[in-house]
Image (cartoon, rainbow, N blue to C red; front, side):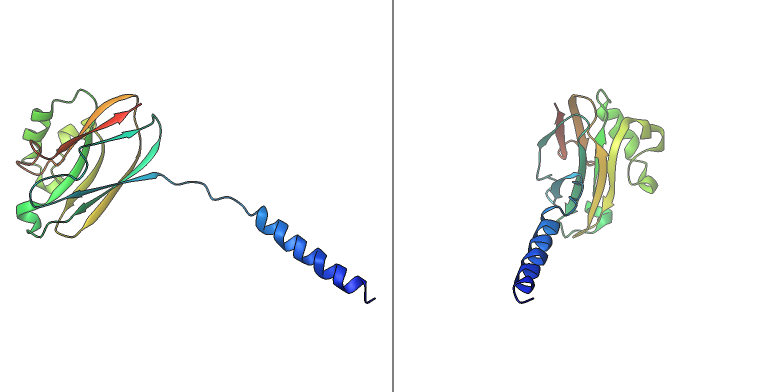
Length: 153
């Protein structure tokens, strides 16, 4: 019996090690892209890349201190070929929908609502077909400066 007991301990230890080695692997979540905005009307990223069909989570943080009503920021990813000026003009009167006009919702791939100071929001989406896609802050007057490009390969 004395020789069996140490062997049993060894078997249990080995079994525990094997169980840990074959533990289930968690599915990877979306790739996180962090973007900040500030009171100087700038996005921290002017461009980023993705693979076609890749799941992305864009996290926007407004690092500014001015009130949301004066310097709120959102993030709107537009479909390829959208007339930026026409979208932004329509957005100026769409305060109730976070400056994403209902009539132009079909032009949007993903968006994050308007954020006040020190607030964060996110959008999860799959990268569209290969090409270049513009993202903007559609808060009135911001889109000319606050824009960037998502390049999908």
